[in-house]
Amino acid sequence: MNKKPLSEYSNEELLQAKKTTAVIAITLTSMLVLLLAMGIYISITKKFSALLAIPFSLSTIAIILFKKLKEITAELKNRETNEFKNKTEI
Image 1 (cartoon, rainbow, N blue to C red):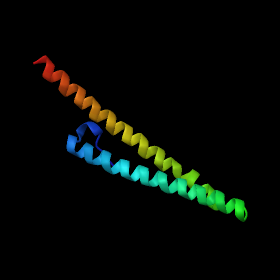
Image 2 (image 1 turned 30 degrees about the horizontal axis):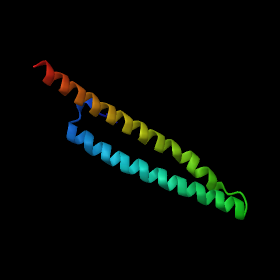
Image 3 (image 1 turned 90 degrees about the horizontal axis):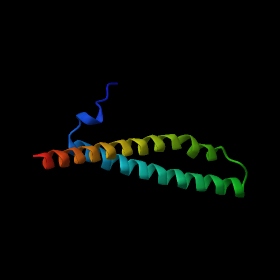
C-alpha cells in the first residue's frame, strides 16, 4: 500500500486527518481504560481473567495513532512557520 507523505497533503486534508485521528485515538484510549478497569474489577471479584490482557495488547494501536497525530501537528506547524517566513521576507 503506497501512502503519500504528509507533505503532499493539502492543509484542509491535514486538518481533517488531524481531527479524525484525534477522535479515534481519544475514543480508543477511553475504551481501553474502561476495559482495563472492568478487567481489574472482574479479576478482583472473581478470578483472573484473560480480559485483562486485551487493553495492553491494543494499546499499541493508540500509541501509533497518537504518534501520527503528533506528526500531522508538526507538519501543520512547519507549514505555518514557512508561510510566516515567506510573508516576512517579501
